[in-house]
Length: 444
Image 1 (cartoon, rainbow, N blue to C red):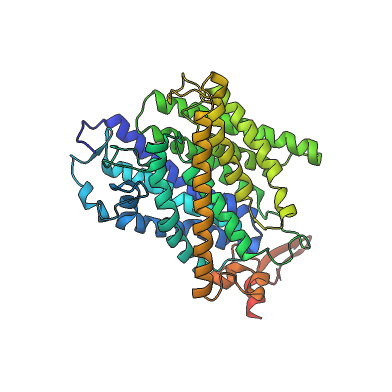
Image 2: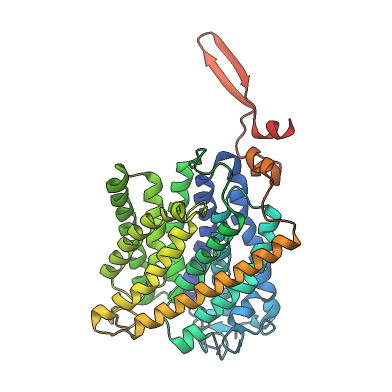
């Protein structure tokens, strides 16, 4: 991290991008919240929102240093290099052409949403206290090391960085491995360890608010322009390229998912449209600066088809990934990362050639190896964390009674919607009908 001239334009863009990425976590809370049943919506929103608090605090204390501190064997940054961020104060602390604290904030938003993504797999049944502890421990032991491997380029902040970015030389522009494959693998582990929701495949578990789902997907797409284009760390041609590919891929992903639904189920759905957008966004994340706009369309389409087909596997394999974190984030993350090995265009900012551009198998091998390393690490560490916490905390799940009545009431003593009094009007009649609310049911 050498002192350099600060660009006001670059600084403004990265600050804006950081805010956009933070907004994505709110969008995720709506996206996930709309997909659960009404009795779980507040808990689902809270699992995303509390991640802001947990990761935000840990990030300032030592998280940024674990990711971007001087590397310890290429595995993790020194947690004491930038502990408390005091070493990054002042005008001389610069990353690229932006103040170091701007970069700190941008990467903090990445860490927050990476943790929040996992929560979709455990909707309706994980104790909130268990989630809070898990989120903190997983961030420290899983996300921070993986982010160091992928994002800590030698000389960017510290002299030495992580092994995937520097020794492997892998391309992962904005976190296909560190964020999406990582979170998707963790989601799979938690879904298996917690077991299925009560009444799965016997009782309807349809999304309670598709408008919320669509709102969340829209906010995610909006924020993702900061997620990808902001990763250029400058207001330049790289950001412009990433912006366009971030437009193209989710557009193709949405259409591809709808085509699959039309052929398979006879009707395209709004939930499918929203899910296709997210699948396309996930797919283009690692490749945003490595492929052409046409390549982005291809990645989005394959991600949309692949994820739409993958979500059907959970019934055959017997795990309950409540909100399809595995089917969307893990699958599309793998598709996007591996697609770099095929579709990387030497004229794109990454200046690498995939198989279709005469680049040979080396890049594909590097991308595959990076994916496998992060996938295996996340599975192993998440398993250990979950099993230890289950033993220490006396279980990770709410009781069967709490799950049946609704986790909102059990965990937060609140209900997302007030059903206690609904006005009833008819010719000559105006009165209120009392409807039992989830809160009243729990009290009784």
